[in-house]
Length: 231
Image 1 (cartoon, helix red, strand yellow):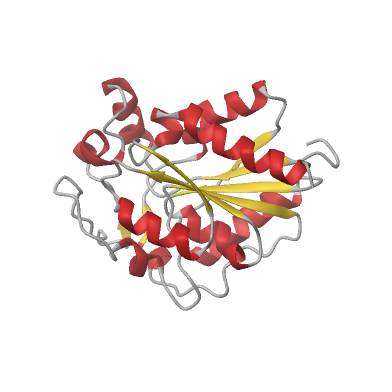
Image 2 (cartoon, helix red, strand yellow):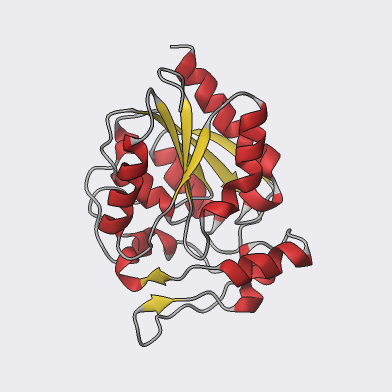
């Protein structure tokens, strides 16, 4: 990555991998912004933070760090010195002493949201039909099928660990509120965005706008990059 130039690092959520950011990366690259997706093992919050920080070590200059869904907790838990701003995309943002589960289950449950429980190995999988019904209901049938096929389960341990002081208390933040999210209650998203004093950008998008509304996601990230670069 270019030395001294503001770059973007993207963190995927549960039931996804870095490819979920492909359309956003393409749009950022078109605007001359370098972006890389951090591979998260989804084995524990601590493991995911360590993996994210290994990616951040490879980036020179300031970074705008974006996280989707569960990864909101991951980007808030890192302490990497090169992070200049945070972008939350339909993300979970636990405060100090809270867990991912605390904020995920805070709001009302959409009638089409899946019932989630770990398997005998401690992994939580998303039912295949949930991709078209709740995870990415605005996706094409082909996109939903691909998302289901490549899903990565999340360990139950990830959502039960209380976080320390989140980085959003010390860095400027943007929050894309997904108004048609069936996984994380939009009212919960607004609650988290307001308490972090984020710049809120609301769109009538589903839970996975990086796939179904990449222009909206890229626009918020570019806004954060421009804010950092103009300082």
